Length: 171
Image (cartoon, rainbow, N blue to C red; front, side, top):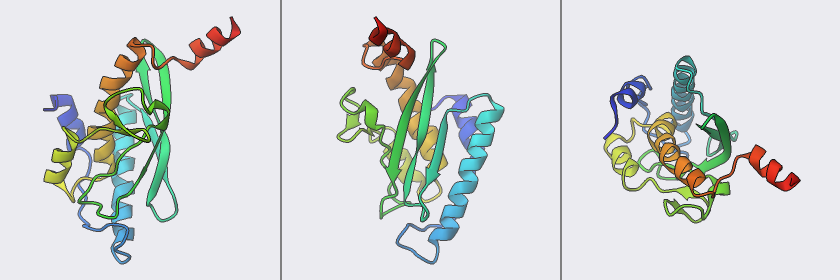
């Protein structure tokens, strides 16, 4: 399924040990700490490979995450807001990542801008829960989705770079 570079990158993301979701008040802080450690490691590894492509932050209790992701296409950076909530059944159920500004632009998306990860990513998550975490969601879910969908949306004219939007508005 994944190419060798993806497998190598994902193998360097720490697997999580604590099986706890937000309703588990005693163990959730430990799980959240592991999530942050894995995300930091993934971001560091991406920066070392000159492949920095997202920023994430959470609310105080770690149940709501927001940030930005970007994709470089033909030397232009396309940036998008992203958001997701941790489901009550986490980590047995993966979060549903939403890219609201792309809502309705592709068939591989649900209402509200939630990206479709059911066919490829959901079975992988299910096989690896609770060891997978948010870094794995980004690496194996959102990253590949962006790599497939964004060039297609650009090619169809459904996503236009901000500079080109300004140029068109100025004319």
